[in-house]
Image (spheres, rainbow, N blue to C red):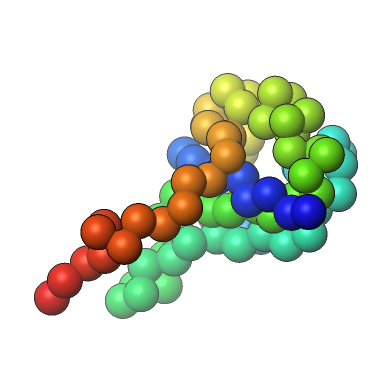
Length: 89
């Protein structure tokens, strides 16, 4: 199975490959993505990493609260998106 981890407080210049490298040191990374602003294309400072279920806790414990690119990052299991939180324009 695969679990999705939320990674917050990322430096603006972080690329998905950077997350692959950092998380890959603690287990198998299935995929990673940086969330960007739709209008500007700039990073929003957070992303998601999909990892093998058996590696998720190790990665959270190893990386949560550590320095990454000069910033202290937050790593935890991502919550399912709630339909009530959709943006309405």
